[in-house]
Amino acid sequence: MIEITETAQTYFLRLIEQQDEEALALRISVNHPGTPGANCDLQFCPQGQNMPDDHTVEFPGFKVFVARASAPWLDKAQIDFEEDSTGGQLTIKAPGIKGSEPSDGASLEERVGWLLETEVNPALASHGGRVALVEITETKEVVLQFGGGCHGCGMADVTLKQGIEQTLTRSIPEITAVVDATDHQSGSNPYYASDAQGESAV
Image (cartoon, rainbow, N blue to C red; front, side, top):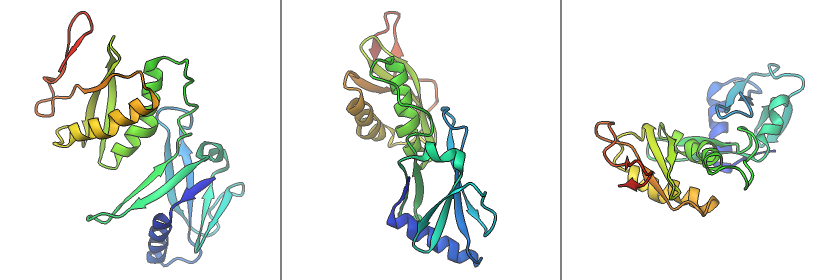
């Protein structure tokens, strides 16, 4: 059901030991499942405070209780911990919590929006950022607006070309390019302009 990587297990064990509370576990649930605003809620769960119908997942040294109503949404979810110079970042990837993936026959906007919400934005969230779809041009260029920690970031172009563009074009080959519509200095949008015919200039 839920995969917790070895690094994440080690991280959780360390956190649990620091609490000095007997039989402390973790509990995970999904808020607003099946919607674009869905998110995972992971908390400590003291002994006896789990719900009777929770699913129990055993890991070496600790348990994770999964809220019964959330279990179907957490199928193939993965929890990982990546260490870095600042300590590390915990990430939860749960591809099913926002609903069913659009079919190949769905509109390009739907398919791009799905990838942004389920793959791109969860990755950017670890840096406090996100992107939003502005438009898709007649030539199938995807125009995005950066926000949060990505607005004004000097690495935004690298993120766009080496991360976001590759993610989108790998799943949707008909996309011709991914364009940043963000003015990372003033927010007024100098890098992208769209004329009346829908053609873009960068």
